[in-house]
Amino acid sequence: MALLTRTDSDQIAHLELNSPKNLNALSNDMLAALQVELDALKADRSIRVVVLSGAGKVFCAGHDLKEMQAARQNEDGGTESWADLFNRCATMMQTIQALPQPVIAQVHGIATAAGCQLVASCDLAIAAETTRFGVNGVNIGLFCSTPMVALTRNVGRKQAFEMLTTGRFLLSSEAREIGLINRSVPDEELAKETRTLALSIAAKLPSAVKIGKQAFYEQAQMTTAQAYEYTGAVMVENMTQAQTNEGISAFLEKRTPDWD
Image 1 (cartoon, one colour):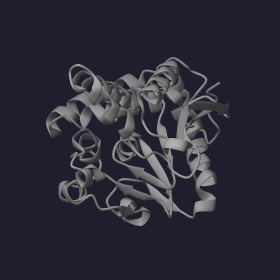
Image 2 (cartoon, one colour; image 1 turned 180 degrees about the horizontal axis):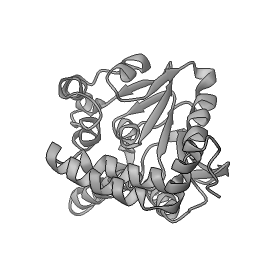
Image 3 (cartoon, rainbow, N blue to C red; image 1 turned 30 degrees about the horizontal axis):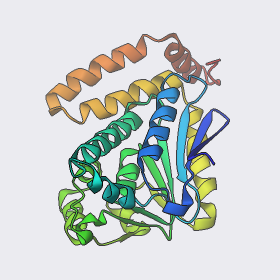
Image 4 (cartoon, helix red, strand yellow; image 1 turned 30 degrees about the vertical axis):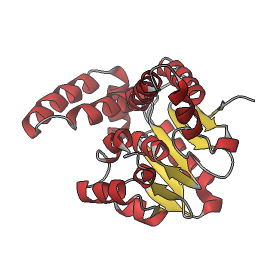
């Protein structure tokens, strides 16, 4: 059974974590499978949007703790294995935001620890109403330091710090209120609502979305003045494209743009 499945339709790639027995944990093998598929998507111009979901009862319960504990038997006590695990996880999370295509997390059940980090690393997220979110490592004596990176870039500092230090689960409605997800929807409408959002984005000019996504993350790390200088240059680059000219002309002429 494949740990990760991919289904393509209507220029949307649907990746599904497919290890329900361990709650779709981000094991070494799962991280490797995700990295391979994400790297392939970088150059896949037939895909305009990526949806990421989990099979079974939950989205993702974080790293595989049994696998992590087993590494303690290594000669170095596990330090090399753990460093490699967290480095590869960080690379995978950053690859999501480096993709030219927007990535939508379709979340259900629970998204905890690195699973919550995965949601925060995606560009957009829609969750079922019954979903619970948490960075719960503190409850077992392991502070969620790497999940904290993505979390603090999504929500306010005080909300993030409370989650990290209490290990409390957030309901889907709370996750929406603090900006961790875009919306909370009835469980039975999760797939439909996610696909509707994906189709809306897929209908846009891919080159413009690619430019915009890269600029979105780049400018967020800059001062206001630097961000305006940088994004001004990005706008100029966008304007020089023939398809952008077609899009603007079509709008002014009240017709549908011909981007094919």
